[in-house]
Image (tube, rainbow, N blue to C red; front, side, top):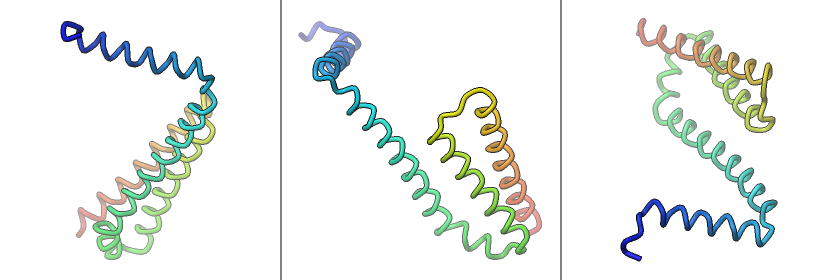
Length: 121
C-alpha cells in the first residue's frame, strides 16, 4: 500500500464515497446538505462582514456626511440582497447578467463613496 500514489489513493477514496452515496440512495440527503452548507456559508460571510463593520467601519462612517453614509449603506444592502437572490434562485442568462451588473454597480458606488470620504478626511 505504500507504493500507491497519493493521487490514486485519494481518487479511490472519492470513488468509494460516491459508490456509498449511490448504493445507500443518499442523493436527496446530499442535496439537502449542499443547500444547508450554502445557507451556512452565506450566514458566516454576513457575520464576518458585520464584525468588521462593528470593529472598524462604524466609527469611520459616523464621521461622514449623512448623505454619504446613506449611499454607502444602501449600496451594501443592495449587494447583500443581490447575493441572497443569487443564492436562492441560481439565475442564468439575462437574470445572471442583471445580477452581475447590479453587484458591480453596488460595489462601485460603495467603493467610490468610501474613497471620496477617505480623500477629504
